[in-house]
Length: 291
Image (cartoon, rainbow, N blue to C red; front, side):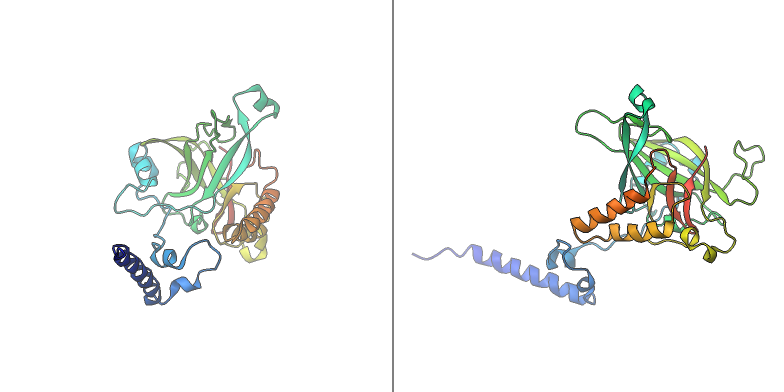
């Protein structure tokens, strides 16, 4: 009796496909070979992975004209012909909550995830021409029910996404938060996205932690970091030490490395229950300060 041969062409095709994928990688200058080992992907998966897209947190139009459906459409990557943000590695912090006696007494907290746009470290508040998204925040979900609302920025416990948009300081002498003389600042607006709608729910002063006229004189706070990061801190933290640790966190090659870096970041972010949203910017680190 003859053995069936129907499986042979399929196996041969799979072998050819795998070989073609490997050769394609060499055809690109063997770029995949430079990727670190141990990332859990096969050679074929590496050779056929899509290249990273260009990303930008710069809004296509002023925020005021995008509130409603346009901002929600853009931030979700559904607006054709525009770039839209990508995000650094997200972190979760305990935050002061509101809406219950336990929250008021400090017996309960909520958990908030925060991530910076990957180009947040380009934000220069001395020369800010357009509105830009700097940070994404949301209360994390739980298995049953919702967590409490966050207190400082009013983040909903329903897990809605909020985006911190940095804007040029309004040229308005009657502005409720006049820019303090000699202290570079911009304005932040917090945009809540719920389905296909968006609205501004809070605003305040976005200011950099670097106060030196010569950034080189204060490398702990004034040197542009890489990569971009977001967390909850105030300006007394060394952003250089934080940035170096965040780079280890983002590039960790194993669960053990990631957990070690994450623990160091949590230690640097101690006291973050009520601290401001803290993000990389062109002069080191900036905070979303007083409303």
